[in-house]
Amino acid sequence: MSKYADFEGLRAQAVTLRREGLSRRQIRDRLQVDNNDILNRLLEGEPAPEWTKRPNAKDDLRDRARELRLQGMTYDQIQVELGCSKSSISLWVRDLPKPERRTRPVGTDMTQAQAGRQEAHERRLIAHEATRHAAAAEIGPLSQRELFLLGVGLYWAEGAKAKPHPQIKFVNSDPNMIRTFLAWLRLMDVADDRLRFTLQIHETADIAAAEEYWEGVVGLGAAYFYKTALKRHNPRTNRKNTGTSYHGCLTVSVLRGAELHRRIEGAWCGIVGGVDSITKARCPI
Image (cartoon, rainbow, N blue to C red; front, top):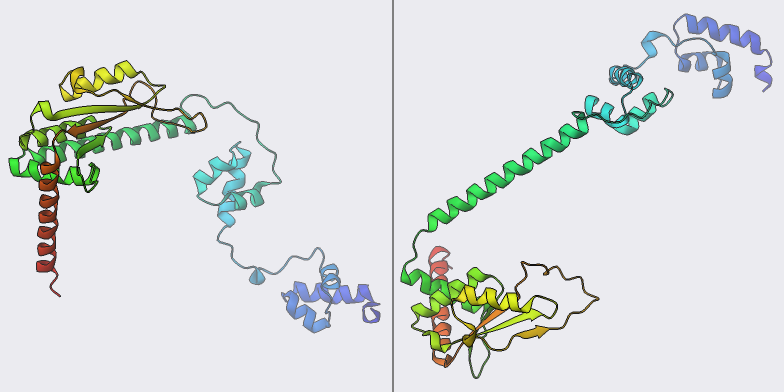
């Protein structure tokens, strides 16, 4: 530290150089001061020349953020207004007094945002419904061939395929799937007296109401229904299929259905073969 013994003389030189417009680096090199703390003390109170100041694109944002904070805005509100990060806002305004908490009156940003989200949700629902109606209108009446192919596909996806003694059993909880499958069975000349139904439902449900519900879906009375199969309720599971909309699953069985099962299997093979022929035609090897 011996070279800094004449501190006041060194400071006078540093101040003179600063006022002549030299930068810190130039003063450091000129006076050979390699200690930043000493250099800071030598230049204390002396502003940097304008040419050494880097332009800061956020200066205007910082000034505007401070102005908004003084008006009582929160960080969230300032962020929405200026589009900058909360961390930057905090750095710029943290020395300012925190605004008093105010109760949001009706019509403020939060209420408007909630109203906007509700409107957007309603618009999406309308658009979804319009898409569904348009898609339904494209289908129109089904031909017997179309219903035949649809039924084969439905059964191969949802029906029983056990061997060596095949049986016709179709299980679903969707009443429209059940109605469609029954329409297909009637297309296949399956008479009502060959149909039997079994309801499977949790023991905690309204059994009588569910049985009445499915009788209405299939259009046949209790004589066509086997005894309802009850599922034990496990209190450790979090079941969502509860309430008045829960009706269990219905199994549709066809008596003497082995021959029909073979027809379904053959038709499905034909569908797969048709798909393969299209694929090969479009994508020759």
